[in-house]
Length: 292
Ligand SMILES: C[S@@+](CC[C@H](N)C(=O)[O-])C[C@H]1O[C@@H](n2cnc3c(N)ncnc32)[C@H](O)[C@@H]1O
Image 1 (cartoon, rainbow, N blue to C red):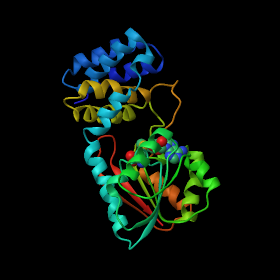
Image 2: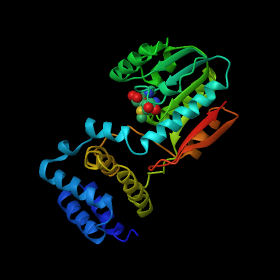
Image 3: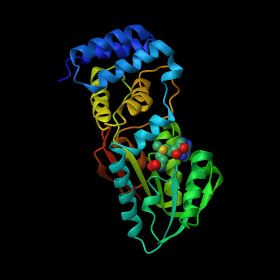
């Protein structure tokens, strides 16, 4: 099915070397060999724009991100995440809860139950925290809010919680800072819940198997959007996909396989660490890790 992968991998190599003209020529060849594949067609559009108007004009845009997050597999993914969290909350008579990297509350808000006695939210982005707090206030949910990265919070605050949870946020913490974050979680939480993707190891980014994984998955991702396809593909998915191959981009995401998360929890002293699949998302399956 992927006969044009070798030529497309050469396009990615040229992109990595900042030879955008050559990247476009090779991507066009991949598209001609397999015109039925969406990912090659979108890559050609992206590289054409890049050649015409430069990198700054083809970067992630808010509109593209918003259409992405509100559509496709993100809808069932988030429904599954909130349901998995709520199932845990319901197993308590009362609980106090800390949510780390809450964002605007997309996962947390639909999960909230009446038995949460005390809710603490932590979010380093001021604007996301503002949106979150407004919604919590609208729903009459009393809460304590902190605007800080988890690494700062762990140094400033002492407290203890029945459940500490983080959905797709600990992937932002660099590997060298993660052990102390998880150890703090064990010391301050009776139970830690982590929701993350079982992401591939992307260390060897130019290996043909890594490229195959990325390209096959992005084909699925693009296909999940029909009406908004051009907006989502050009404003979010292509910048993300090419971003893996852009040496000049500063890394802000450290996803990893679930097996690696489990090892890190065990190394931080958790004795029971269970992982369960919650949704087979296009990029990678999403799991909930339940550690105590
Ligand atoms: C992909 S979003 C997930 C948001 C939310 N938990 C959800 O599931 O919708 C990642 C969140 O982690 C936050 N974040 C980034 N670095 C962080 C850090 N060092 N400590 C805590 N949160 C962080 C971001 O601001 C963002 O809101």
